[in-house]
Image 1 (cartoon, rainbow, N blue to C red):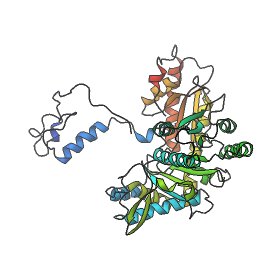
Image 2: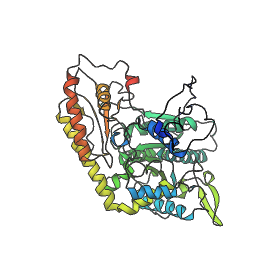
Image 3: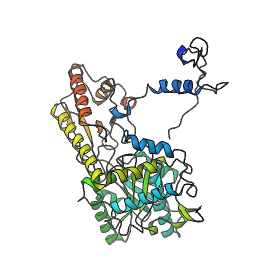
Image 4: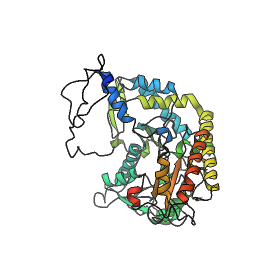
Length: 468
């Protein structure tokens, strides 16, 4: 979660409120709003408290028009009802809520089957608050297994984790929190993600694993997981180093099994030790729920697992968090049950078609160059064409926000800091009709942008409307 500081200067100016907020008498009950940065002296009626909070939240952006987020912004009303019925159930109290625990177990079994575990009954996994926690758990398992293999050198030797520079920030956090050296494969030219050979070259006896991303957040491209495993197989043949792979499938692990069935990226590759995904992204569930799975119990060191009493039996748990609502896990099971394989295939294929169609239409404008086309993740990145000098992607992002669209603009990392892009994330609920409206607004703005004397962005760091 983001860190916040207390308000620096007291803001206790009297504020007037709508007289109608007085529940019984619009001229007497409410004369000024409660303070913002200290607890009010007394309670408010629930309708008034609701209205004050509701009105302030009206200034948030419209989540359905947010083309920056991968997170689900629409679910069926029935899913919302189920979530409301389960929001008071504490997921950790598995002995008190055994059916919720059973639905979690079924989801893990379904994912193990979906990701082609050699023996789905032997695969182990758990729900998490999102892919960030799932990545932390997977990283902890990699580090502990490495430490066990190198007990004669650790502590002392410093473990490292190899990954592309395009990884999501949760992997930077993992390396920081658990004192692991990050070894990053930089971008080069038109390659915007990890190179398998370069990753293998960074591995040594202190490498706990290599992270492959099935769907980079920078441009929506899949990293070549099978080629990565082949490069590590060759490394083992040359050096004897046996380096496991974790697949961060935050988005792609819920897309590829349905519409890229011939792509081999999962537990079919013996070197893949663990996989995570975000149920709240293309798993089609509201935030926040993620999943982490290991090929078998051998990949998850027993000492990381805590055990709680479960109806007089044994319930192993592996988590960084403790109390959290069971609603999202229930919603994930509902969605699995509701859609099945064919339903997921239809939803993900439709979303990809929307992404590809929108990318083609943006390219046809002539002002933009596509970096990706939405044909892997339903996500694509564009930059301004070489001959466009009057405006930049930050101008486009700013002007589209005036129309309600949250369109992220940002620069790429080393070695492509020179490249600034717009990224469009298409999700279920971003329909062809909405993409038509997006194109209408973009086309209407372009003549004005073309008449600018120069890009209006002064500070690209401050203008960046999306941070990984």
